[in-house]
Amino acid sequence: MTLPHPAERRRQQSRAEARRAILDATEALLVEDGFDAFSMRRLAERCGYTPPTIYHYFADKQRLIDELLEERFQGLVRSLRRVRGAGDPVADLRAFSFAFARFGLRNPTFYALLARRPDPDVSPPPAAEEARAIMEAPLARLAADGRLTCELEATQQAVWSFLHGFVLLRTHRNDVVWHKDVLENGVDALLQSFVRGAGAPAREENAR
Image (cartoon, rainbow, N blue to C red):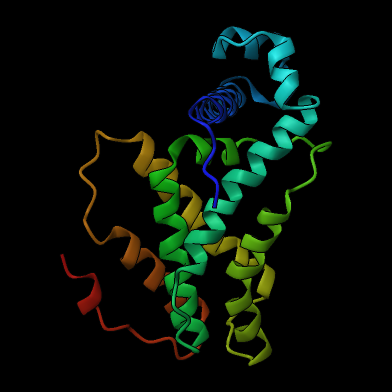
């Protein structure tokens, strides 16, 4: 295997650093200003690269936003895939919920972007649809088995509302002394409310 010349390695590193800086600045501006106010001029001011340089790496504004969202959602998908399925939809939903919330806490800027109303002209990236499918699969199984106490859509929205609120509050309300098990307690309360026979799970794995 032939290794790249040191000069080529430096160029590759420089290109990677430029792309990373542009993507990170894009994410920050979208969180601050929203999709409608986002512009390449503002991006150039933020990241320090000229518009021609930005267009060298990304064909246009839409391609840039698409790539950012796909990259970030791929990170969420990887976190969800690392969850070992238990074969029980209740246990799987519980584990996926924890993984989703903890990913949000580790990536607050990206999650703040998710919290904004999406641009109707921006299609969800493939990784976003994959993450949604992973999260919704256990609930679909429970609905098919007749174990949900209310409609599937209402249950999905209840779970999403709790996880969404949990991540945003934990991220932005540092003045609150949060109970160490608030995530586990909240998810378990939801499951026991919406799933017949969910029961109280063993909590040894969550002991701190």
